[in-house]
Length: 77
Image (cartoon, rainbow, N blue to C red; front, top):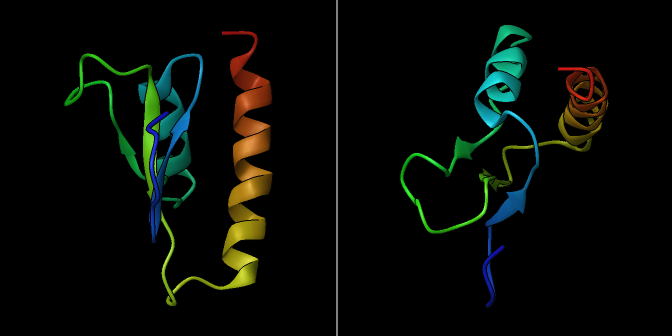
C-alpha cells in the first residue's frame, strides 16, 4: 500500500468489508491491527499490522488460520 521501508509494521491491502472482518477477528480474541480507511481517506482499504518480539511463531500461525477462514467466509458477504 505504501512505498518505502518499514520496521515493525506494514499496511496490508484487503478487499471487502474491513470493519466486519476486524470485528469477526476481535470476536475470536484476535486483534488484527488498525483499519486505515477511517483515518486515511486517500489510501486503498487496508489494515496496519505490527509485529514485535512479543509475538511468537504460533501467534502468526493462529492469525493466518483465523484470517484465512474469515476471508473465505467474507467472500459470500
